[in-house]
Amino acid sequence: MRRLLIVWWSTTGGTRQLADALAEGAREEPDVEVVSLRADEAGPDDVLAAQAFVFAAPENLASMAGRMKDFFDRSYYPVLGRVDGLPYAVVVCAGTDGTGAARQIARIATGWRLKAVAEPLVVVNGAQTPEEILAPKTIAAAQRERARALGRTLGAGLAMGIW
Image (cartoon, rainbow, N blue to C red):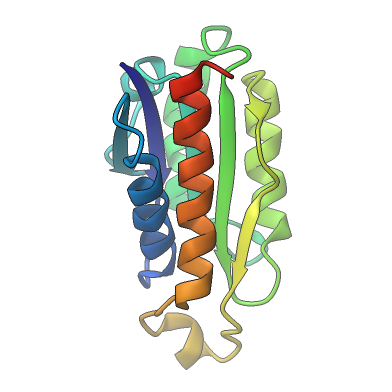
């Protein structure tokens, strides 16, 4: 059975909802094992045990969240040269933009020589004030469905051996 690893971090719940929806979509494929881990729980062994990845993070100050960077800091060198060519996708939950975090994750994935199999899924929640930014998030059903569809695509591609 092929394994999809979803590594995510969420402070206010938005990214978690997207990661959960993505996992639901991927789990529709019976021949794919989906492992979803918070960034502070995931490490090099989890990366090495998977055949595809989704990295999901909020954007903070135009960068990926620090806990996601910590995951990459702990995992990068132990797996370097051992995951070449494997597929990945990126999910970002952001207040206004999201492209900074998506670019950072893509640069790391390029260093690992992973293959992007989808454009980054960036969900903008519109939070602008400190109160809105720090408040718990509720992601709209249409945005969760976009994440679920990405999960279905990744699951199907793994099950069919496309990647």
